Length: 212
Image (tube, rainbow, N blue to C red; front, side, top):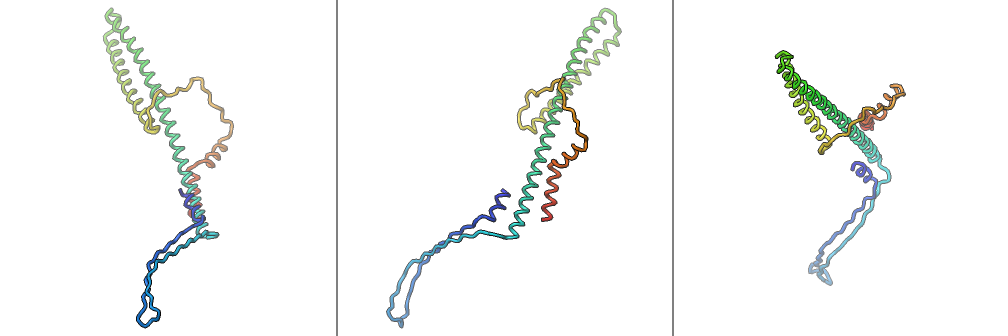
């Protein structure tokens, strides 16, 4: 819309006019050949203008171009930040799911251990304190499981808030996944970041805009 507005100022401007009138002519008594008359009048005109050079328009157009560039940079920055947020929340869901799986595995182990301790206690092979400690551990694991389920639910809702849809089963990364080795020095990545950072570009566009 901004580009179209700036471009329109250099396009031809056409105007069409039409005038309709009703005319009545009356003569006084001393005028010879007195003939009163009435007639309708019509007038049409077509005017076409086009700016060939206007410094103010050129200046405004340059400012508009900088505004467009600034808006595009800000949009890229928002989209980039959105992608970062989605990735962070995606990994948060995977982390909380992994934590819940570990707690459930521990819960299964503690439950089996509790059954063994109860049998041994019935046979007078362990003390009552051993049984109570195992039961307390089982209760703690159950509480940890509830907390982990709540954390998973919250993290999934946070991801759905950004994606705007239902979150099903997420893709799990393979344990054998390998990441590419970074061979370039840190200065190269810093230069790339400064060159392609949308937020910095937006600031530079703003500085250019105020100096036009």
